[in-house]
Length: 607
Image 1 (cartoon, rainbow, N blue to C red):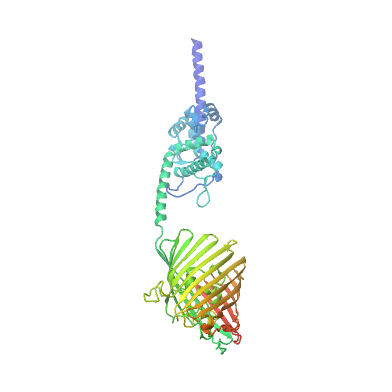
Image 2 (spheres, rainbow, N blue to C red; image 1 turned 30 degrees about the horizontal axis):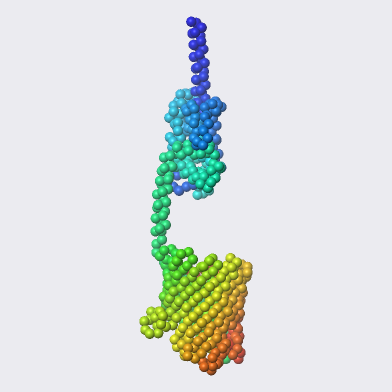
């Protein structure tokens, strides 16, 4: 009986010591977890705030390490999952939860000394928080945090906050954590869908499954909000554009003077400098964000130096590119609507404008001349001047390197009287193909223009000799052909030019041939970004042949050369100054006329 009593006492003592050891180990784990999380701060980002989470490289918090006793308990209690099952089964669930789901004491939890002094208090805390799903935030020492960190490092799925940081010294709200988890899930799904399932381990799948279960509520809320945001975004994209009108303008001040020479009649020209202006106000309206309605009002007071037997030059040669006189009254200079059809086509509807130029059919062929040269002739091939009025145009890219332009314009489209209207009077039609190569550094265009003008209403070329712009009191049908191009050799050097031929059929009398050509060299960014230097030599339109029945067979007897040099200097993004010189040899293609030299100083303000 005595032996039985001593055995019972020994058994109770051993049992008490074993129980005490377990209690001390458990309370030590709780105390460590509490100390590690006393300084953590709660995330302040609202659930609906847009955010991303960075790679967890900047986390400096201590990694949770279970005690040796707990590690031993884990090894003893762990049951390996069956192959192909993304789940983890643990024996001794209470111990396993304390290992795989380390809990975090609130900020006002008991200090470490109190936990050791009262182990039962620590057990009460563990019993109260046995799952991550009960936590208000996720600490860097939590199992869930470390598990997601491991997944992120392996699969690289999270980007970062807008400022490029992760802020690893703070806790995450559960919604922030759910966002990171959702990104990890999406990445793993992408790998599986791409046939790379072997790169995702069963252990990772098990971890993801457990995280999904722990954060099921937050994931559901997050995805619901994402669906709402996507619907709102789609609605905004569908209705984001409101009709807007933008005003932009251009003001040109021009100082112009004939420096030397006589006019086409070999009469002296007064050396009388002039100063004038041109103002363009453009109202650009868009209804869809891709279309554009352009309304341009223009006023100027620059009397052209020449015209057909007019002006101080008595010829169209040497005209300035911005000349014109509206008696200081604003006039409607352009009314055009452009809209896309598909990805490769633009349609143009013009009520009035500057011919095919305003249908975007020429500037792309002479980009270093159009808007930079100071003479009208040097801007582009003069055959484009066989056009004016209202009509339509099409600009279509067959490929990235082949562009097609079509156009039809009528000056008297709004007049219902005989000899007018859309199809019963003066008109011009364009067909053009442009080929690009070498990343569009080379561009060559082949143009055909057909036009008709009744007697006394000749379109004219606005450049060249008097005979080349004469209709001899006959209706004129024109078939014009042109080749224009530019080759940008280097960013600072480009060559360009054109050749133009026009057959004038003076109806009822006979035919005449008109030729013109030009060659140019340009120096982009000469002396600074945005500057441009240029030199051009060419022959303005010249009547080279004509039937005897038209004008007694009289043609331009000689060849006049047009030489021009200019330098566009950009003072700022909105102001530029361009000095230029024009030299005409044998004006009006007559050797008996003295050379003419014209000086131009153009200042442009854009806003």
